[in-house]
Amino acid sequence: MIDIVIPNGNEEEFVTIAEKLGFKGLCFLYDANDYLAKRKIENKKSKIKIYKGVLTNPKNIGKIKTNLKDNNTFIAIKSSNNDRDVIEKSGAGIIFSLEDDLRRDFIHQRASGLNHIMCKLAKQNNVIIGFSIKSILNFEKKHVVLGRIAQNIKICRKFKTKILVASFAEKPFEMRSVHDIISLFGFLGLKGNIFLKEKDMK
Image 1 (cartoon, rainbow, N blue to C red):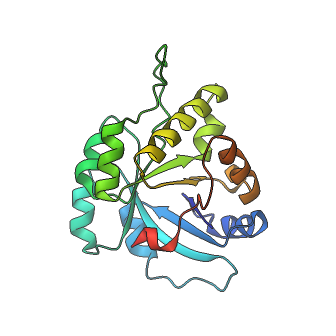
Image 2: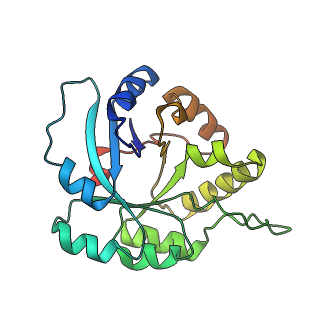
């Protein structure tokens, strides 16, 4: 059970909270420059296993892949207006918060940011669809974002697209316990191992 977070000098706080919330690992996402500086730093002894990845945007991913020269680097991209291109061409490991869109829902369908074509491409290109706890916390109309997530879970399951849940927290208080996350997403239709696994980062 690995959570994905976006630290800003508060890594130790994240580790302390993660232990209390029941996680066994944390994946810290950094921008490319910070990642290069921090990936060689040895982790202090802790019950929490630490992983590192890169958080970037579609415009910079080509440059990052060239500079890193490491095909095993875990690359995360937050949803934007170029989601299909990201899924189809970028080589990212995960795209998250597709449901985090201010567009109004349609009459018979949620504007969830995902469709069957994107799901097929994600499966084909081994891109994970990520659901963000932070997006739920920050979305004003909780019932809207939860409805969109439920719709996206349904379509991902239909096309056997790889999915996971993480907090994507920038501050430790934005994290939630393993038990609470499993309960919420079980209600939304997602069961089994819903967290990041070490093999997903390779």
